[in-house]
Length: 329
Image (cartoon, rainbow, N blue to C red; front, top):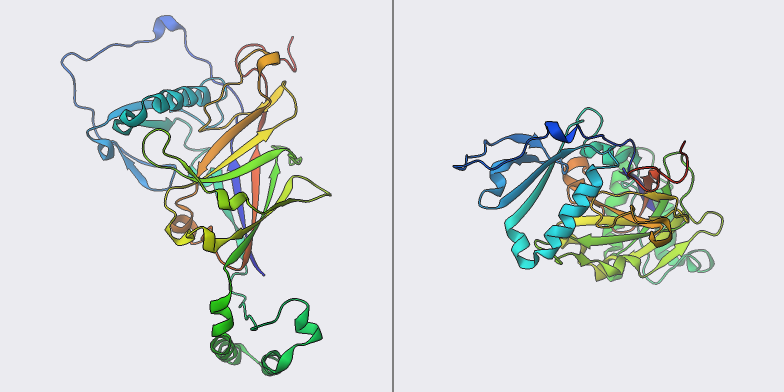
């Protein structure tokens, strides 16, 4: 089975920001209205972002940074909740959030692909055989392929063998369902395992309530006994129409098992500032992985491979604003 490693970091919290004295804050309305100047910045999806892209829409423009806890994600959550309440009218509203700490964060900081893969290892199926019968009853076709493979003496002869074997096994390959295995592990900022979590894939549509969950991703999931931070997802790609999945996002929902410590995710609409007795111990975060093929050359869905994914989450003492309930003086 061919494999490659995808590392995804969902930065869920860190240090908090402190606002200036309210007396120094300014707000108002331009009368008459002024034309907003255009600008160009690298977007979180790796593409260029221009304000003019959203011409004709109401743009809510904010500033923050990934490692901000007390303000930025909560502000984004509030905006997301308000956007959702707009219903169909939300199509005319665009939220743009600009980092003020570009040196430490960017799209490459949230998602990266390890510098190794072996997707070039060929898959040569044998018609009517499985893992057991290739040993007990290999048959002439498999025996001939193995015998010819043993004659390979260099790169040119290996290429010739691949071409010949691929042609001979075309029928078996065409009859196979396309499957892919994902092995996912979730750890915290110290590398300790996070055992209680859920992973969801979805397509993000325009407007409120337009997200479409890809339920086929979670139909066949197995947790490793020795370390429940590892999950194995067997996905039948034929059920997904995986070649036509634009706007692909991943959501992770994790719980610390305590109302004192939680995970804070960008893209979440929940709040962890409720009193401890009423507070949910779980939190969620989302990440756009649509640009993965263009940015890295790696396809998220790749038939007959095992994809290794590591998700890294940051824990934070709760509540996120004011005096936390873990360590205070």
